[in-house]
Image 1 (cartoon, rainbow, N blue to C red):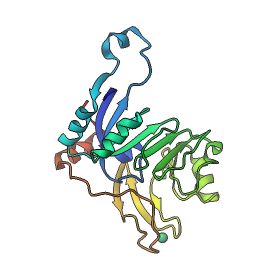
Image 2 (cartoon, rainbow, N blue to C red):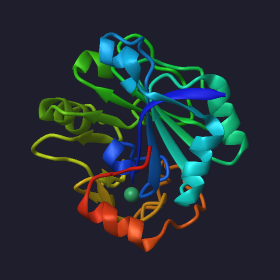
Image 3 (tube, rainbow, N blue to C red):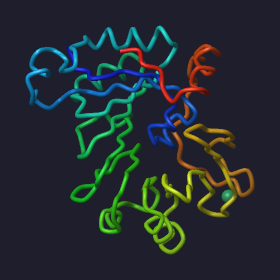
Image 4 (spheres, rainbow, N blue to C red):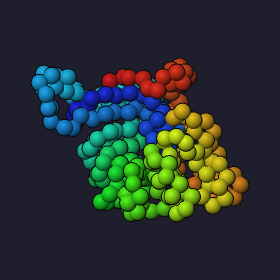
Length: 229
Ligand SMILES: [Zn+2]
């Protein structure tokens, strides 16, 4: 199976606004090219490039990375195949997709449909978009007034604001004790899935992952991502 890819890079999942699925992990971030070519240069070949799924897995393996984050409509069978091979899959897209239950969906603009899924995070631009989102689903926004309303007034559990003033830490929904501290797209400190004060179980996907080389962490301390495809 082949996928048309515009870009593949290594980066921290926090820089992709994925906060509750394998926190602190380095991911292979793959930008799919799914629109038909619109211009002549695109038709002439700068329009992404096709890769076999196996090549993508191989690329992830060569950096000891098990989490692959796709931007775009990843076909169901590609997600199934990756999970079958032991990879963790996240997909960021503007509408719900048919993905295996183990996969993580980051849904931008959940205006019409919010799927019931085990692993889901959403980005909202308006109060209206947040209305259908259950309170325990992590919500990301770039507008402080939305953060204030949802987190401080309406009691949503996990709300993050990515514009000034930043609100990117996770607090326990029950006792408000800080649980995860993030800075500049990195997880700086994390207590794990259990609140250290009241024992509340905060929803995170956790897994034993291979450790990418210290050199890769060094590179990602200086630059936001490292292009590999
Ligand atoms: Zn607590």
